[in-house]
Image (cartoon, rainbow, N blue to C red):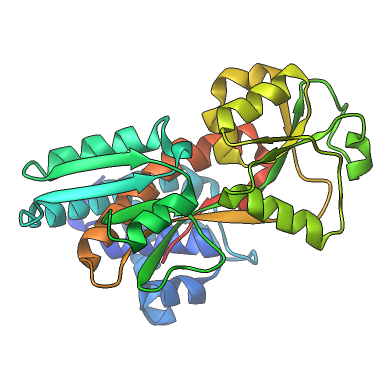
Length: 324
């Protein structure tokens, strides 16, 4: 206790510790924070001296936290999250000039993401009239390109309309969804699915086109009779035993009512993923979009990445929040 009273835990020390655990490398942690390796090493040593504990096992490669370090990391990351959130909120309070805002978003964010974002923005932009609408990615990007909206949260398109800027938010890997008990374990080949047809997302949607293009690249032609434009209907049909589907963790988490009737496995062929991003015009206020992007990343980590990895631990970092 006397050590903590005589010396203080610094923000930079917490940032170095967090970055080192994330990267497993002191040099990479220093690079990420814009420090020299020696300065980063000194910050870590100072933090360990204040706490009176070794936080990192330096005998391992990649570097890893000690048991004490793992315990402290939980608190360190919570502190950093609150400090960063506070900085975002202070920045937003200076944006009183914003009087109207229209945001379009994909319906995968209906459940928890957009309600949380809307409440947060309403609190921080009390003088702003907001319109929040949902739609498929290709129409949201079209509306944005035609300046019928200021922001769009959508899946990345193969070709971005001219004049739009992208802030990546989430890597959402594709997974296999089958009726509960249809397979005894994750299949090793697509042949294990031959007894049921593939349920496809409608090809006007970006997700449908991406799945179709990937299967074509792999020269896979599973039998398929039904195309669907609704995620809920897709998982409802899988739950009923009508077929199997190629979807994503985001789609699975949103279809919570069907979790007891659907099994999710890794794909039995080459992996691929989609990217969900925040889009705006190049002449729009980058400060505002950056703040909203950071807010969304924090929400996605809590309501998508962490529960998704808990439900499907085999995903690992394939499901993850993305930085700029």
